[in-house]
Length: 50
Image 1: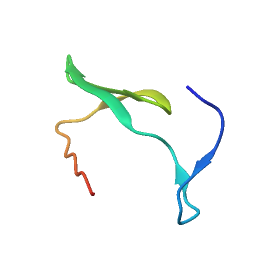
Image 2 (image 1 turned 180 degrees about the horizontal axis):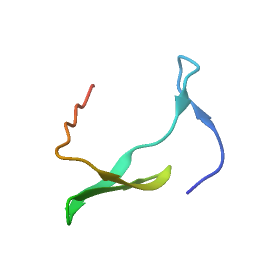
Image 3 (image 1 turned 30 degrees about the horizontal axis):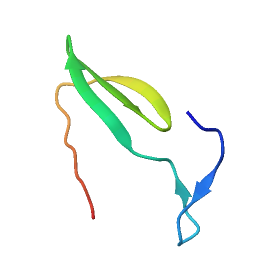
């Protein structure tokens, strides 16, 4: 994971992207350029804007 701050053309911070999203024992595990996190939820909705 890089600690360098990247900016988009609009001047907003670019946190990178999600490399992996897995469901393990009722916990969503996400990982990407920004690090990783685990989220416990009944369901999840992923929206991709392009």
